Figure 1 (spheres, rainbow, N blue to C red):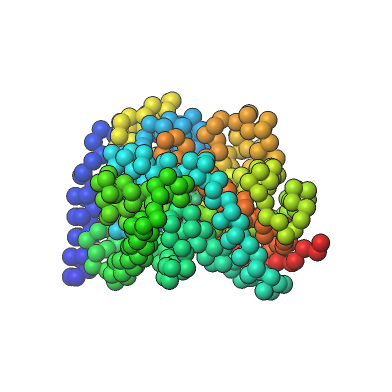
Figure 2 (figure 1 turned 30 degrees about the vertical axis):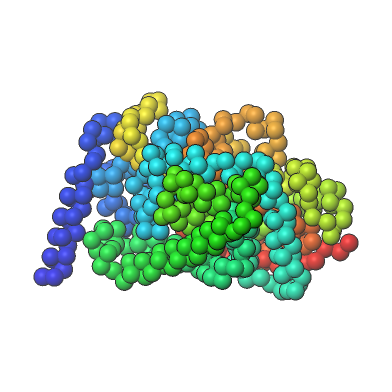
Amino acid sequence: MLIWIFTCSVIFIIISDSLEGSDGCYYHAWKIPGPFSVPLVGSAFLVTHIILYRIFELVCGKLDSLQTGCAKSWVGSQLYIATMRPTDTEKILTNCLNKSPFYENFNDIMKDTLLTSKVSIWKEHRKMINPSFNSKILNSYHDIFVSYSREMVKFLDDKEGAEQTDFLPVIWEKTVDAALATLTNVKPHVIKERQRMITITVKFEEILIQRFHTFWLLIDFFWKLSNLHKEHKVLCQTAHEIAENIIAEEYKSYESEDRNDDTIESKRFLPNLTKLNRTKQITRDEILEETSFMLMAASETAAITINTVLTILGIYSDIQERVYQELVSVLPNIESSPTQEELNRLDYLERVVKETLRLVPTIPFILRYADEDIKCDPYVFPAGSNLFVPLVLLHRDPEIWPEPEKFDPDRFLPDEVAKRHRCSYIPFSFGARNCIGFKFGMMVVKVMVATILRNYKVLTVGMKSWKDIQWDYMVMLKAKNSRLRFEKRKF
Ligand code: HEM
C-alpha cells in the first residue's frame, strides 16, 4: 500500500511539474532528430534513471550516430537539444545568455553568482567584476603563481622518487592559496580552514552526482526529506562560514589606516567588491556568494587542468621531452623562475595545454536556456528548450579534427587555428558569458606546469595512451586513476 501511494505521488508530481512551461515547442522539436520520446513522459523510459549524465549519454550517443550534428531528448516537460555544430554553438552562446534550470541545483551553495544567476543580475555583477581581470592586474599575479609553484617543487624534493598515488590534492592546496593571495588581500595562512574548502567541494559534488543518480531525489519534495539533503545543507553552511571569515578579514584590511584605493591590490576581486559595498552597489550577501564561488572556480579548474596536463605528458614522454627542451632554452638556469616575458615565449607548452583542453575539456559541457526561438538551419531550437553544448564532443568531431583521438599539440599552430571555425574549440566557453578567469587560468597552469617540468620528469604508472585514463564525470572531468611519479632532472 505504502509503495502504491509513493508511486502515485511520484507520478503526480512529475505530471504536474510537466504541465508547466513547454508551451509551443512541440512543433519545432518534432523535426529535430533524437530517440523516440513523448513529451511529458520523455525518453526517460529508455534509461534507468532520469539524470543529466544519462541525458548526456542519450543525446550525445545519438548525436554521434546520427551524424546530423544535433539531437533532442525529452525529460518530462524539459526539452534538451544538443548540438556539436560550431555555427549553432556560436548562435547559442551569443544569443542565449540565461542558464538552463539545471544550474538551480547549485542554488544552495551559490545562488546569485556569475555562473548561475539570471541575466539581469549577471550583467550587473559581471560589469563590477570584469575590471579585476584586466591584463595589468593579471600580470601582477605572476610572482605569486611562481612562489606557489616553487612550494610544489619543494614538496616533490622532499618526496623524490616516491609514487604519488594522487597528486591532485597537492596541486589543489597550492591553487587555493594562489587564488586567495591574488583575488583577495587576505594572507592565505590567516584562513585556517582553507584546506577544508577542498574536502567540502569534493563532497558537495559527490552528493550532487548521487542525487542525479537517484530518480526520486530529483524531485524537490523527496530531496528535502532525505539525509543527503541534510548533509548537503551542512556543507553549504560550512562553505559560507569559510567565505564569511575571508570577507571579515578583507574588511579588516579595508579599514586599516594605511589603506590606499589607488594601488593595484585595491582593484583585485574582493577588495574591489568590498569598496563597491561601501557605496551600496553590491550587498554583503551577494559578495559572500560571489567570493565562495570565485575561489572554488579559480582553484578547482586550475588544479584539475594542471593534473590532466601532467598526466598526459607522463604518458607521452616524447612530447614532454619537447616541452623540456623548450624550457631549457627559455630558462637556462634551473633555479630561476619564468618571468612574464619568458612565459610568453613558451609556445609549445601553450599548445600542449590547449591540446589537453581539447581532448579533455575540464568543464565538459555548457547548458543554456532559449528565451526565444533560435534558428539553426534546418531546425529551430524552440523558446523554452535547454541547449546543451557538449564541448567534449565538439572538440573531437572528426569533421573538424582529423584523427581526433591523437594527442597533437601542433593543431594549435597559428596556420591550423586559422582554418577552423572560432567555435570549434571553446574550453573557456564563448561570447559575453564566457569564463572570466580564462587568462588567469592559462597563466597559473603554464607557470605551475613549467616550474614542475623544469625541475622534474613526470611519469605515469601503467598507462600507454590518454585513453587509459578513467574519468570521473563529476561537474568537471577529473582523472581518477592518475598515479604520477616524479624524477629529479639532472643539470
Ligand atoms: C583553468 C581552467 C578553466 C577552465 C577550463 C574554465 C572553463 C570555464 C567554462 C567552460 C565556463 C562556462 C561555464 C558555463 O557556462 O557553464 C567558465 C565560467 C566561469 N569561470 Fe572558468 N575556467 C577555468 C578557470 C577559471 C578561473 C581561474 C577562474 C577565476 C579566477 C574562473 C572563473 C569563472 C567564472 C566566474 C565563470 C562564470 C562566468 C560568467 O558566467 O560570467 N574560471 N569557466
